[in-house]
Image (cartoon, rainbow, N blue to C red):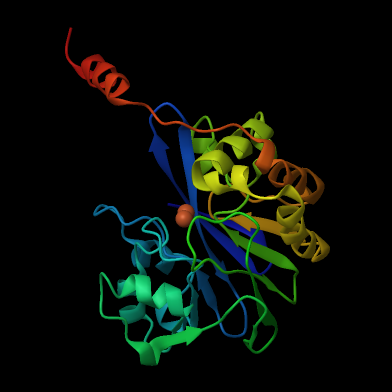
Length: 264
Ligand SMILES: [Fe+2]
Ligand SMILES: [Fe+2]
């Protein structure tokens, strides 16, 4: 995991997951250095990961006051339970559906949970966090947010895209990425296949309020940070209903892949 300072108030903790044939999917968590510090998502769940250790290089986990879980997929909850132990003052921001999904794996301590639905806000001392449903999502519990002081928008899975190398995927600036449009269209097809089924007008109406926030930065869980690229990023997700269909490799392709691993 790499730490990058993105704005005076935001540190990126970047990691990535290699996806055979597709590249390297960024997997980002963030620290918002507010009066009441916030950690946004807690990394991959693989056993070799240690999110709390990596976080400790950026902030004393005991100082964390809020954990904003954008949604309870396993690429976002890796260090969640350990962080709740290491941060006894912290409360876990999620939704009723989010807590319900997590309860199938773990006894969610409801006294530590804070339910926040899209459209609701939370005062964290020097700013407010306002929840929004991002236009593209893969989990019904998804809530992104904008913080009021710097205008940064945390978009969860929306605006993602695989990168050709691990260095690009864990880097601090999406401007380095070649062919961003193809990467984002591919990710939309994989992560939100429903976008091809929806009424484009109704779908477009879900983008307009987020575009109107005019974020100072778009921080996706699955794309390097995007500053000053709103026009481009919103144009790419607006095209999702007309994007490609993704069909994954089949058994024949898997067997060919496995054969390629065998010694000659
Ligand atoms: Fe997800
Ligand atoms: Fe994700």
